[in-house]
Amino acid sequence: MSRRKKEMMQGYIYILPSLFFMVCFCLLPIVMSTYFSFTDYNAMTPANFVGFDNYKKVFQDPYIIDAIKNTFTYVLITVPIQTFLSLVFAAFLANKMQNLGGNFLRSVMFIPVIASAVTSGAIWRTIFTTDGGIINSFLEFFGIQGPNWLGDSKTALICICVVAIWKNVGYFLVIYYAGIMGLSPELYEAARVDGATTIQQFFKITMPLLKPINYLVITLGIIWSFQVFDLSYLMTSGGPGRSTVTIVMGIYNAAFKEYRMGYACAMAILLLLVILVINIIENTFFKEKLVKGDAK
Image (cartoon, rainbow, N blue to C red):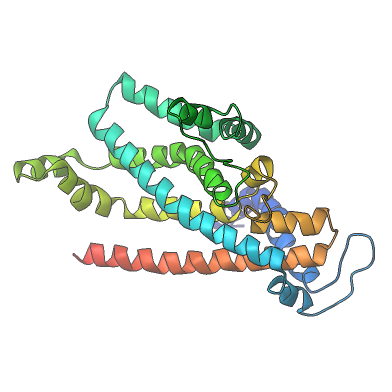
């Protein structure tokens, strides 16, 4: 056996464990879920083929329709805000606070990231409590009657969005901060010589050069937002009514409370397809932007 073939065999052996786990824990579950989505599988009796019945039921189920609306609302609120705040904070820390204070602030803002969802949900549920909660106590100090934040369908989902933004900003801040620190200082020096203001430097230098990082942050934000379950389940259990029910919560309820595994698999496959389509559109958009930017 030649040396080249030996090196190739060694390479295949090295990646074999990773490939095995990828097939077992990523590819195989998707294949099995796809199969069960066309059946009436309930984890107790043999699965019977039902065709596209499960997929039809998804779009006829008022509970899931509300879950879809809530999830898309959640995505549209959290992704833009957490992306914007992360970028602004990262730019401020990178340009104005290159000292111990800046390091301390980055560490503090990263604490919510490493905190468990259970801890975060419990803390914020206490903060949003109607009687004795921090927010309502503050409002009462000024003679303002605070609302029932988690008990009102108009504010419950917004409260969950606030917690999600608080929890995710620190993570994306670190990514943006690393990207900004990798930019050449000479570009900013040349811009200052030409009379560019800080805001002009941000929009003319920082933003264009961070397009690949924007793509990463927005992609991760969208995927995480579509997977939201823990905060909604811990803080409101989907209530009041169905105002904070999400797609993943619908999948969980169908699979583990109602034992309609086939129906739950159909919802999971549709969610996967939605994320894939959004990712393809986003990838096409950012690719065009990057190509145009390189051409200039």
